[in-house]
Image (cartoon, rainbow, N blue to C red; front, top):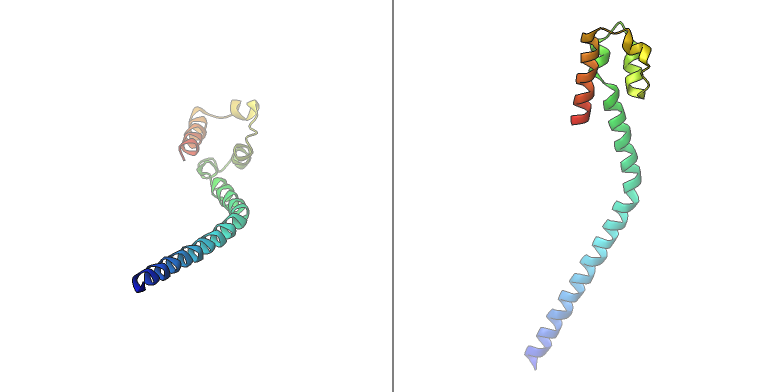
Length: 101
């Protein structure tokens, strides 16, 4: 009879411990879900800032508007037509590296 009581007590302690851990994990999950949207917005902003640091601006310093147009994806055919093959290759290489990353 002592053995049965001890086993029941240990099982109830295990159940209580499980319930405590379950409640703690649920609270952590709720907190993580509540923070997911703001964290995602912050990550998007960080990625936008990193994307603005394109090497095209450094390689084409006399054409600053080209770097801005690349970031906005609004290059016009006239912009491209006025460029040299080397300048176009710089842009192509930059686009390839953006795609890879």
